Length: 369
Image (tube, rainbow, N blue to C red; front, side, top):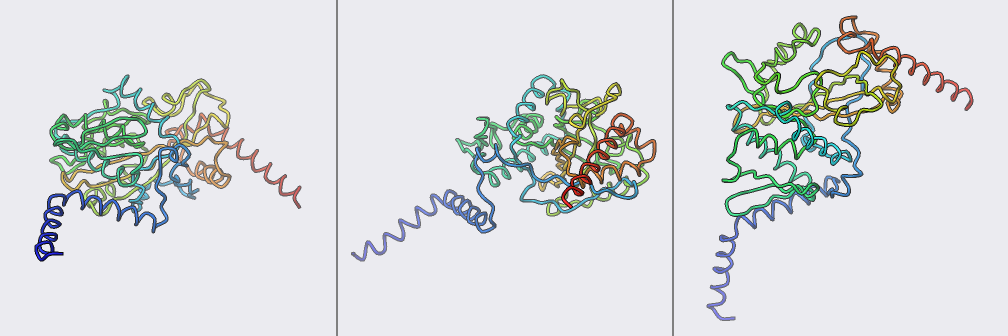
């Protein structure tokens, strides 16, 4: 090899590296993340895998001995901030129908939330492409970066001239990608957080159309003891939240479904969870409706991105320990709390079912002895 070759080859290599620096950096980052996932034992999920994937575990009913409104905040499992499971396509279809037929009811954004809505879409897209790379893909064309949903075929602009629309479009794109409802919380001049934007497709007893612009305090007005027991703690928690300290919490409700209800009617409950005319629901018609709520401070806008993932479990599918804990908690509720929760509709049936399962378990134990 000539002296010229020895000198020229490194120069050519350096030029190529500089020219393709961003591509090389992205390739190294993706490769490193894949290696990390393998080291951590986290399998790479494919679209087919998602159709068989069990939901991220919901928090169990704890069976507290005394009724109290609690924040019950814990550190967010950041690897599973947004989760996918076997219900994804079915719920995605429900979301499509709601956004087509009831868009104004389920999706609202105040003008001041536009920047935060676009940032939320970017954060959601970055996470999904990293966490589920076989299902979500970044596509760069000209000056526009988009996310491609391999499961649905949808594509949404994330950055560039094509995504310079209103915040409501960005928030809609984000909620079409996820299984979570997403809202933006902003602080007003009085130092109170309020609902500045919301894509809440599976609400219980309210709609964004009715409550956009409401403060957190006003949103929780109907909740018994909320103002007396946790209002100040919630305000302090939201004010102290940082981009590096995302948090989560869980709660549950009891819902009654009619035999002829479809999934849209079960998930979209703006009027509330209990039909007063339903007096004798079966265990398969009593649903434990759980919410996993997540809180993230967006680094650029400083607003809070609030997510809600909804889980449904019929009473007859509830583990015995949780059924026992539900009964224990029911007995601690003051009358006005029980009325708020709809206990007069389903409470007797829950107790009957609990006694039946307890007796069956006792008989099984006696036979085994």
